[in-house]
Image (cartoon, rainbow, N blue to C red; front, side):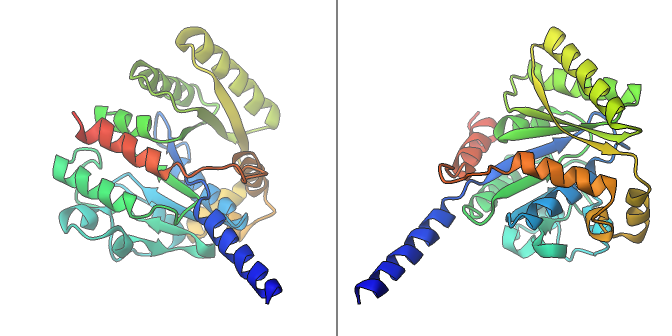
Amino acid sequence: MNDQAAVLREKVLKKHQNSLRNCKTLAVLSGKGGVGKSNLSLNLSLALTKQKQRVLLFDMDIGMGNIDILIGQTASYTMVDLLEKKLSIQQIIKKGPQNLTYVAGGTGISSVFEWCPSDLAHLIKELNSLTNQYDYMIFDMGAGMSESVLRFLKAVDEMIVVTTPEPTAITDAYAAIKLAASYSVSAPIHLIINKTLSEKEGNQTYERFNRAVQQFLNVSISLLGIVPDDQAVQKAVNRQIPFLLQDPKSKASTSLVDMVNILVPQDDRTATNTQGMFIRRLKRFFLER
């Protein structure tokens, strides 16, 4: 009887500990289009699910969302329906490959961040209902850095900036970080250098970029990873299959796995749930004005 009681207590304790797992919110952005941001958001999310992490990926590029296209699916409901029809978040969450769940961007609204207060209040209420259901919420941000985008960035736990070694991409990524810094966005910033010809090129790009933001913006950024210019990526895009699933041994896929090893804590026993803090920050920056 005592043994049965001990087993029961252990099960309850494990269930309680799981419910308190940290829900980290990540915003993925870039200074310009064409750097592979959405594709990396998708495959990074899948790499996290491979590590048994519960992930919800949001396509925040309303009107030009493409996460569902990259997966080769058609979403019945999208963020547009959430706002226009006031649906619940559970109604628009769609199952993707490998236990990934995602919310499609849809079409019909010019910008996800040009909402009226009632839209924002509805979104925040629905996000709040997801407490303890996920380990990661990843927001694939759309183009542009409006005031509303900057407020949203102030609410998330961390930011991931995607760029390439191309000078115009570097310049635009720098401009995005500069604008965020001027708006007092304090979330830690990780950098992904995509489409590199070599690891050396990626490291040199990061070192130059980091020196510039430290010197002129007084901001420190960490290098999350370097993704090589890999033919496997384009082949996967053409087939509408995430490259991590189509070719898990490709160089691009390997780089994503390395990033996840950096993102996921090796020991999460001391982790606390930050979903509540994310919601409180959203309310403060959007509703309590």
